[in-house]
Structure formats: C-alpha cells, structure tokens
Length: 423
Length: 195
Image 1 (cartoon, rainbow over the protein chains, first blue to last red):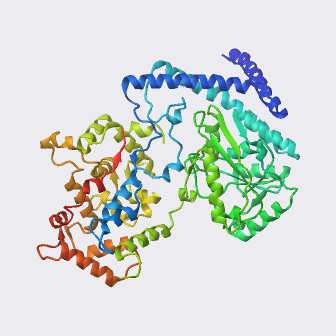
Image 2 (image 1 turned 45 degrees about the vertical axis):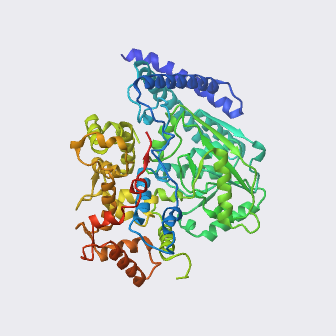
Image 3 (image 1 turned 120 degrees about the horizontal axis):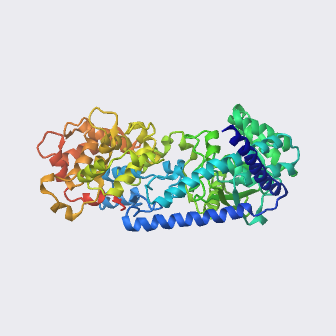
C-alpha cells in the first residue's frame, strides 16, 4: 500500500501545481488561457441536459407542475381605503363588525407569503443545478442524473475545492506583503479566477472615478472581489475580529481603506466627516459602500440607509446580479459563518455575475437624502432586474418599528370617524 | 431550506391533511416549506415569536389576534396540522365541494366557519359571546390612540345595540351571523391559493 501512495502523491502534486500555475499566471497578467471558458461551456451543456431530463420526467410523472417563480397565493393588492371605504356609502364615518375581515385576510396572506422574510434566505431555483444544497423539491429522477450528481460531488470536492483553497492561500500570503495598488488588483484577479468567477462588466464608461462614492446592492462578501477586479476602491466598514480582521489589516497596507471601530460607528457625525474628508481629496480612490447594510439574497434591493447619501459628492450606482444556476452567492449570516460560507463558495460550480455601471447621480435641488437614496435604489433595482422594496434590511435581525402599525391604525381611525373634523 | 423540509412530511400525513383541509398535494408541500422556513427553532412547531417575525404581520393592527387564532386554548406551540387547519378557513368556497362527502361534516372553509374565525377574533375569552368590553379592546387595537375612550365607547354601544336581539348586551354567534348576512363573506375572507 505504501508503494502505491509513494507513486501517486508526486503525480497528484504535479497535477495540482500545473493547474495552479495555469490559473495564477494568466490571472496575474490579465489575459486568459481559455480554461475557465471551456470549463463553463462544458458546465452549461451539462446543466442544460440535466434540466431537460428533469422536465421530461416531470411531464411523465406530473410532479413539478409549479414553478417557484410564481407565488403561493395571488394577492389582491386592495388597499384599506378601497375595502372599508366602499362600505361607508352614505354614512360619513362608521364601524362595522365586518371590518376585521380586511385585517385578517391581509394577516393570513402575510403568514403564507410575505415580501420580506423570503429575502433573507436563498432563492428557490426553477430547476435543479446538481448541487446538494439546492435539492428541495427534486427527488430521485433517473439513474443517469444521480450518477451525474455523484460525479459532480467528486469534481467539486475533490478537484475544485483543493484547487481553490490553494489559490486563496497563496493569494493571502502574497497579498499580505503587497504594497502597490497594481499588485492589489492582481490579487483580486487571482481570487476571482480561483472561484471560477466569470464577471461581465457593462457600461464601463460609467466606472466610478476618484473622489466619488460607489454604491451597490449587497449579496455577499464576494461583491467586493467582483468589483475590485475592475479597479481599486477604498472600503468602508467596521473593524472585525477573526479571519476578516486579518484580511482587513492586510488590505490597509496596500491602499488607504476606512475602517471604523465599533464605538466610532455609533457617532454618525464622525463617520460622515471622515468619509467627507476622503471624498474631497480628489486623489483618493472612490469609496465603496453597501447602503443596505446587510446581505440580501439578490432577488430584491432593500432600503438604502441615508447616511451614504448625506456625504455629498457624486454617487456612482452599480448593480450586481448573480446567476443562481451556477452557485448561490448569498451569505445567510444567520445560518452560516464566514468559514462555512467560503466552503460553500469553493464547492459551487462557479460564480457568474453581471455588473452594470450606472451613470453617476447627484442630489437634486430640494431633494432630501431619503428621496435621493430611493431614487438611486430604484435605478439599481431596475437595471439588475431586482424587486424594489422599501423594507429595511435590518429586519433580518431586528423587530419592525411600531410606527408602521401606528400609521395603519391612524388610517383606519380616519375611516371610522369620518375624514375631517366635520362631525 | 434544505432537503430536510420535504422529507419530514410523510405521504400519509399529506393525505390526511388533504382530506381535512381540501388543499392539493402541491399546495400542502409548498405550505410545508413555508412552515419550515418560519420555524426558526426547527422543532416542528411554531411559537408566537415565529409569527411575529413576519414584518407585515407585526404591523397589522390585529396581528396578535390573528396569531392567537392558530393556537388552541392554553397552548404555546402549533404544529403543521394545526397550521393548515387554520389556513384552510381561507380557502375559497367551491361549489362542487358540497357534493363531495356529506358525512364528512362541514368543510373548514364554509361560510359559517369563516364567520366563526372572525367571531373568534373578537371573542377574547372564548366564551362564545362578544361582550362590550371585548369589543372595546378589539376596537382599541384597530384604531390605536387616535380615538377617545368616550367616542370608542359610543361606537361599541351602537354596534351592540344594532346586533343584540335577545337583550343580554352581548353578541352571540347567531346574532353575529345575522348582522353580517348581507356581506360577501366568501370573497372577503378567501385567499386565492395557486396550484
């Protein structure tokens, strides 16, 4: 047995080393050998075949009638005014025992399906992409498909994972010592290449310029890698401990990023002032901010916190949309910690995403920060094909504010007593 | 959201729920997914906190009463059967259901049962009567701080006066039904479930 391993190990070493060089060298110099492209082509063909098999079998067995892009229920979207208002008729203001119907219907609708809680867990796929983790409604279909899935597991955990791990480790080691912006970008390129990331940049003429603020929707920590592949940014954020802290300290040595202590974050003035100083220095790299404040699952854009929009300066909106077929990029920080998230990333097929650079926007006359933030949010949502929600991403962890309930109560009270004070 | 969700629900259970509630097979599995995603404690049952985590429900003035409707008397947890049983009240009424099985008893989504659901929203102590006090409390939930006690009191008095036929100053379920006989309960208390 010993002899067998003694022969196999050097072969494996050579294999991985050569693959490593084939990935890293081109990445460092920014050209492509076409390996990733070939891999993607094979992958797409395989997934297409798998989808057809699932569809064929579902037609025979009638198991997958529904498509998860449809909702569970069809909402009426009737407003409080319409439902209860129409009952008022000739009586100016009124209460009726049937008023509870409206509230109970809305309540039950939200229990069955609501706009917010679904954004904090991974998107349901229409058809299976041969990853174990997305296997919700897809049960045993055929032997060939199961074999393919088995092969996929071996490929992903046996080849892709060790490869990517090695790329990342070498990146961290070199990154720790690099002091130049150029080397920095190179490291990000290796990172991305290591994840088999295929990024399509659109409208690069709108790329964020120095002294500006880049604003994007947030899905995962990988967003940073995706954007930094195409230029340097100054990051803003909280100082973390653990693995993230090490990475942060390494990054600061290369370019001036803006890290805040947790206590400093509470002082909004301090934060805004520091950001403003950075922006006014036209030589500094554009700041990268994620105004949602937390990771959302890439099907929608949630409320933008107004802080970034009060700094002044030009806002460069960027929309990032991942293709869920090749791997789910969303980081569910409530469920997975950073390490298991990275593991999932490294065992996905690939990361495919589209990045759209939108034309720069500035605050209009008479527009306050909140309206400006909403305007930018709509632009990003529209470009990325995401749902534009005004709910706060902070609802992932926090309770909703009472003011919203009070608004509803106020509206209803107006109907009960009659619109104005003419009683 | 893993494959665990559908594997915990057995075919026999699905059949029983189908018979009891009238939901289709695919609706039951999808609602089970939803149940599972709300169940943060992953113990196969929902608590009141699990419901309150839904923002749209938390801002509903009657949110707490609706949540309460899921929990049987004195209990703090609702399992999937109970969850489905309550949701079944909001299935639209279909004509052909009347002929299905006369011995099965009234379906959960009949007009009567929909009215019973609404009645129970008012009946806080579950004594099958809506007292003036209970009506006031529910009214207070719906209007918040925007209407004075006196005004709310007179609204409650007027409502009871109009509904009460046997003079006990309370609204019984039959009096409740009579007041609402002209209201299109089937439409107002039904949700269109897809597939």
